[in-house]
Image (spheres, rainbow, N blue to C red):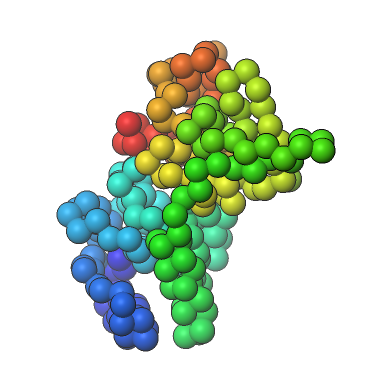
Length: 223
């Protein structure tokens, strides 16, 4: 989904190297991209950061849980890379890129689309190795180089980044609420304003999780 015909043409040509991928649509604007993605439900989407009407990040917010499994940003702007990965993007192709770099991104997308989501997450705890069911997780919090899994009254530290864990979680059940938090939407009870005027998610067990303005709309669209 790109507003530049030449850029879209280039991607079409490069995708010929991957005959198992079928192109189901193209868009010149963000609003049209949302409509087409909802209608065709592709596994993989190439998105530009800046497009008429609304950009790539707006597209993902409007799609919410209907966002494709694999999203690759293709853009000339390098300053949005971190934001793209925080939004759940699989890869970030900075123009101009080589054919080999494009093929690498597509290979990652194929792996993600065909890889089943694990039902458990391994946690090392002293001399023990625990296996936590993903469905039992209430929310996940970033903790420096670790992530903290909140499961009922218990919490478990794993040496993985939030972005890494997000790749293993079912996107229909777990949504990013903040750069430092992911919630299980099945545990979500309400969204409320706190004393600082910021939104937070209230879970069924009473826990509160921060919600950034950028992720609030996406969270609302996922439930």
